[in-house]
Amino acid sequence: METSGYVAGIDIGTTKICTIIGRYAGAEPLEVLGVGLVPSSGLKSGIVVDRQDAIKCIRQSVEKAQQMANLPIQAAYIGISGDHTRSANVVGRVHTGPDAEVTVGDVEQVKQSAIDSVPLPVDREIVHTIVRDFSIDGTSGVSRPIGMTGNRLEVLLHVVTGMGTVIANVRQCCEAAGVEVQAHVLEPIATARAVLTDAERDLGVLIIDIGGGTTDIGVFVENSICHTAAVPVAGNHISRDIAQVLRVSADDAEALKCRFGAALSDLVPEDDLVHVTKADGFGSDRVPRRLIAEIMQARFTEIFETVKSELARAPIPKAGGVVLSGGGCQAPGTAKLASGVFDDLPVRTSEPRNLTGLAHLVATPVYATGVGLAMTAADEGAGTTAKPPPATTPTDTVCSWARELWQKVLQYKPW
Image 1 (cartoon, one colour):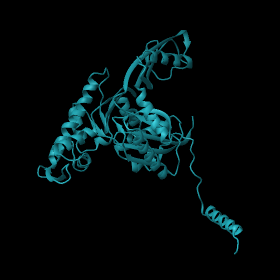
Image 2 (cartoon, helix red, strand yellow; image 1 turned 180 degrees about the horizontal axis):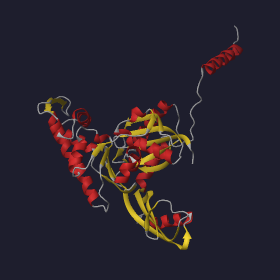
Image 3 (cartoon, one colour; image 1 turned 120 degrees about the vertical axis):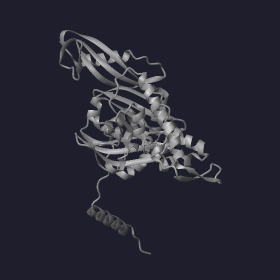
């Protein structure tokens, strides 16, 4: 594992593709060097539907980040999202022997015992295996069991699976764009790495990442993830609602949402009017801005109610707070509306934390997943092998110019 180097994360979403290039050194905060954000095409709800469009957008995002960082990247951590993902908490057990010390082999064996209990159809593959807790002879809360004495070792494992073909298509698009995939990371896990505090993880927190095609969910309790999921209702559905009700184009609906929208209609004065162009390109109208907010409030309420229903079906402890992330959470009043749906739990809107360098460029929820992917790569010491070009000094420039001039003199032939 490298203690310093360069890392990259690529958030491949339905509405945007975001590449983050950073530099890490030991326990120091990640230094952001390059950011590449471009509109996405060729994906729907985290699934590739047009390979060539997806490759083109990924390449554009990577090139933009490389130009800013002045650093070519060869590999990156890639986000995985969509409602094709599933998660489960499973238990594995091994008998270590009478009063024996737990070994590395015991730990690997107990993890494998838990993994073997996960039903895995041929069309699915494991994306993550995350240890939630070890226990020795029934005593839970053990974080590092190696070297401890006991007769029975157990592990509680959080396992995330996804559709193998979906993951393979994303990987192939990245490779066709010139980027090796070092690892796949479930997007709510990556987002949590960038925006959650240790206190929130310990007390219990629900992270809701509202993207374009899906809303991703992650629940953390006692500093451990205990549930992940995705619901197929997100920001694009809000834009589509606006387009259908106001009879405007999809692009105009997205612009109206971002410029004039709100998640609570009470935040908008009743007499505010907005000029809109009809979908036919000729007609125009002035509509109440509050109508846009009412449309958005209805769909946001559905998103949060759907998330709440998903959590009710999962055998998990109740979270003590909610953190919102993703581009879909930036509308005014979103946090207040979410708090009402989740029984007045405290809700905050997130942004990436603990960064240096070009941190101001990524200080919005839009960049949280991309930053989290780069942070995860840094945590695991997965530096890209690319090296920055050597710095050019004035002396180097002069010497290079002199050499070129001398070569021209030598090649010069008089008439």
